Length: 79
Image (cartoon, rainbow, N blue to C red; front, side):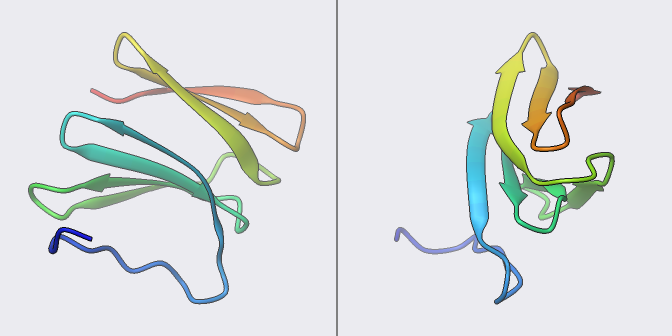
């Protein structure tokens, strides 16, 4: 641990997957929410489109791809 910034995760929620790009840390958890943390301005964006947890994240050309246990792949614009 190198010190701040540090982000709060609900005590009952396990982080499943995490990716980093630029100033953003993107995580998925068991509560079906994708969280995009901006480590510079500490802004948090929540994405709620999946009905089940997402187990994989990939980032390419400014797009975030999330694959979920709900048998779907969602594409998000990170810009």
